[in-house]
Length: 246
Image 1 (tube, one colour):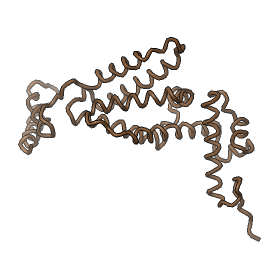
Image 2 (image 1 turned 90 degrees about the horizontal axis):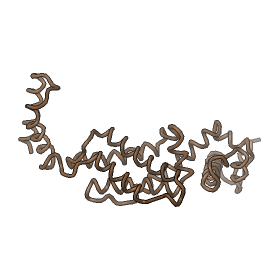
Image 3 (image 1 turned 180 degrees about the vertical axis):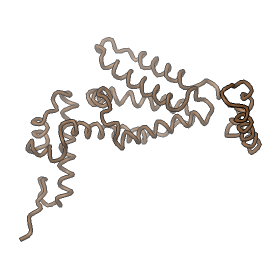
Image 4 (image 1 turned 30 degrees about the vertical axis):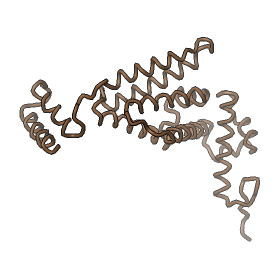
């Protein structure tokens, strides 16, 4: 006689795979809700099981341990953040786009303090998740727009690190302060310090496109000492061809 495949759901009518996924999602949402309402210490096996309407052993059929569950909560948080970032149209000015993205990241942290503290206060929590990688791609896209406009002051990896560090520092510092000492000027000052460190006021290259960039770099070659004479000659030929093509 065929074995029953009744799912671990209230309806009892869904196939086992779908029911398993629904139960997993219910556990993640229960843990996220406890985290938001009561803080990190409230997220225990017993409390999550009660909130999700499952027996405690059921949690470990979906996650190896509580760290695995918290990683899933962080992944859900990253996904929500990425959805919010994608929903907002990008300003035409790439530097204003950077400001808007930074503000959005900080606003997300202030609106979800316990989640944010877990996501960014615990080393590497959820940083290998697809949602986190998608968020990084959005950030790198913003940085590449600034570079293409000739306004990026530092290289792209350093720019990404500075943007992340200032947003994270702004949120965690704000949350650590007593409410009567939380001055919005702190957030504005940190954002503008980041913008100054990462961008230039005017484009380093006045003419848009690769031809303008090639001409600017060609003009600077005589002052550099990093490349050998042969390398300089070859690079000069490449830049001349790019400049002519523009």
